[in-house]
Image (cartoon, rainbow, N blue to C red; front, top):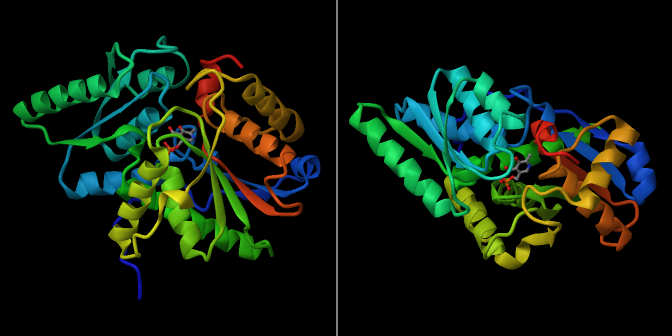
Length: 321
Ligand SMILES: Cc1ncc(COP(=O)(O)O)c(C=O)c1O
């Protein structure tokens, strides 16, 4: 049965490159491929653009004129939402937690250059952030605007479809490169990327997927399942992903958005060996987790592993490693 096609915009340049990194392969004993979603061509790239292609298509179809989203002060998702909305001529309000680096560095510098409204909420709790977002939405409506709210990370079933597509893209590239993908390793932050990848991997016939956790989340396996099964329903696939199908490995270190020693070393290793930059909040810790799992024998020797570079590099200019 053909799957249902959902409307999306073309905001990034896809397919993004996928290459084998020989020195990392030699170091770890697996065949290490990197999928460069950091090079997707809008802003400084990153995983959020694939999600936004679906979410902003929905916003446009609903006739919305202003997009509201949330995140941490250095949110990549917020900045990429701002950049994509600018390209589409949509207004944007970013409601961000006033925590960590809140001066005009990294993503906040980009938000300033993009000339979008940033509202800080002095809290550690997303309930407060959403309450402020709701107040802003009501004010916009009272002014005759039509707001569209994107929850943190764009991690809703519709957004996750972007990573269902990414797995199909990876499988097609692997075919051209004459190998088959055994395992995908990705960062799992708010779960949308991981959820979409699980669904794509299932459709491709059982590629293994491991998500590296970089922030503390309650019932995270259940949440990723909820996103993956919601995405499955949207395209007419059977929503049968179970929490035990979600492989998670924690490499949070001192805390979310706080660099870990291992993450910083992994960033330096990738830069020194390959001239590729990872970030201190997501991909550096994910690569550190991957290296540690290799040492522990988690991957079979010679396994074909695709590591997703999900972006985030602007944070390098705000958070020292
Ligand atoms: C650079 C980067 N990588 C990975 C992630 C995690 O993606 P997700 O929130 O879909 O789990 C994020 C989320 O903000 C991110 O900005």
